[in-house]
Image 1: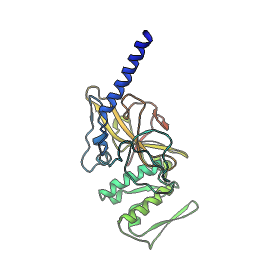
Image 2 (image 1 turned 45 degrees about the vertical axis):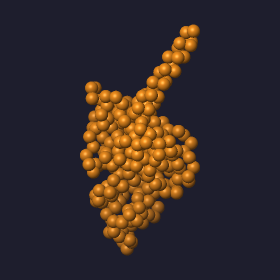
Image 3 (image 1 turned 90 degrees about the vertical axis):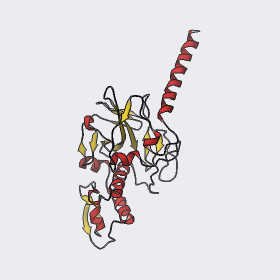
Length: 269
């Protein structure tokens, strides 16, 4: 009899968790803003129009339940996601974790016509601004030596922009992204920041959204990633009863495919 009672209690608790989660997810929502509701007592932080935070919150999502596809069209084998960004990737193994973060940041700046801010270091330390590509210059790579050369297609067209990004995907990574970004304290965290370990291999997850408990001031966040091999950018599940949200805490951050040590939060300059 006691076992039956305990089993019913356990089942009730599980159903309660699923019920709470279903209340936080609108499966018909087309964006983070529409699909993922903060838990009770939490309120999203403000996001100004034309901000990176607003860009991420309103980025189109694929239909709820869509699998994460790899660059070759195969499905990702590990079930770690709750939704997938409707963001095209190349059919080669090129857009991995850091590349996807760079792509989102660059697409936001390009949409806002903030062309001069689109610039990234590659692994050998060279700064590669998009503005030089727009002037008709390209980087010539010979071993670990790089130099600029004139005489190529110029302008701020989408084709020049995509050519620029493909070069960055090829020669940048978590190491260069970690080196060029600014360390941040958790007290100043905002959407568009990222947790990163720069290495080979390394990894990075992007903070997509942020909400605050109106009573306690406790913060929670949504996290997104690409991974190896190249795959669609996806929103991660979490291990807590507030999944897919994560608590913002001053301790090791456990995500489904990577563990980030304390002090791993960084942001774009």
